[in-house]
Length: 128
Image (cartoon, rainbow, N blue to C red; front, side, top):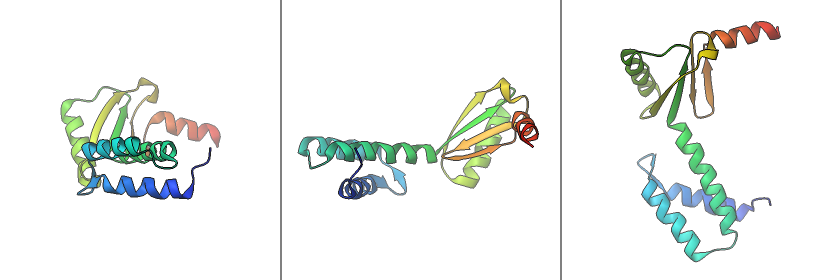
């Protein structure tokens, strides 16, 4: 079922109420969702689904996934984390070991992906 304009607008307003100092406040969001469930306004299920989507997008904007072909030392991990924090503000960083990359790094932050892996370059060559 398509999300109505009214439900979308209300969901965005509720989501904006859960932002404190530019960051998502989980407790406030939980209270808002509980209040919506208790009151059961028109289209409340659609509103909650859209609110969950907005929340997922916001959380992913502040969470970086760094994939490397070889395990990174603690020194390299802290260097990468500090560089990402300098460029993008306060974020959480998750490191993954992905041997299929062959070499290099792939960084995903929200919907942005920076791929400096050898596998990516080989795929580009293969397609050209």
